[in-house]
Image (cartoon, rainbow, N blue to C red; front, side, top):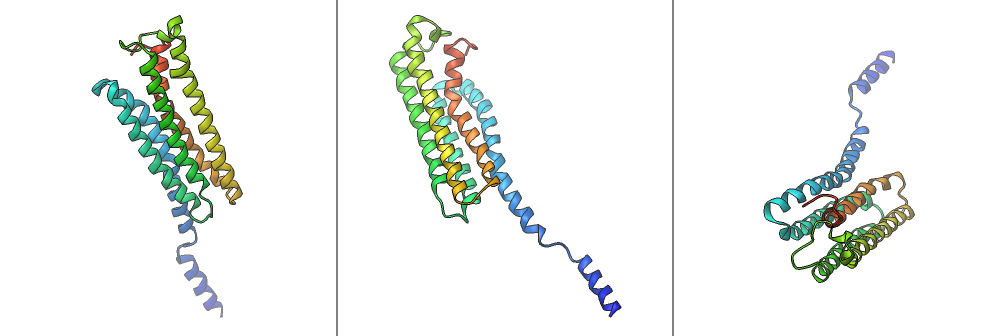
Length: 202
């Protein structure tokens, strides 16, 4: 009997711990879609500047739409990993609505820019002059804060719906995506502020 116990103990020691394998694969499957949006956000800042310098800033809107497509794909992937076993679709709905809101705010900025900024273009420090005050309000300030508030509301909705569905600490994995969404949303405002408020010369 002692020999049998020794054999069984050796066998159990030799066998790999298969219980930890699903946990590792699950953690890896969650870590990748969580971290990727932060990588996209960093690349979008540098990439947009280089793209604008090479192809002209009139082509930048097409690149911005491309960033939104990347956001949508990464958000869909992340929501699938987090909520595939949960009966809620509100977080994914908040993701889609947030991207639509970003596009609408960009359209607002574009229309206001064409209406209020001189045909010669946005001059260096134009928003700081008296004649540029109205353009500063409707091209930069209002769209930025309305868009920021909207993204904050949609983020809270996604977190609350996930919490009510039973998720807890895994909801923190949503935060990087929403930070990336804010960074990409703010790209046009960053360039407008840099030129119109004389932060840097473009």
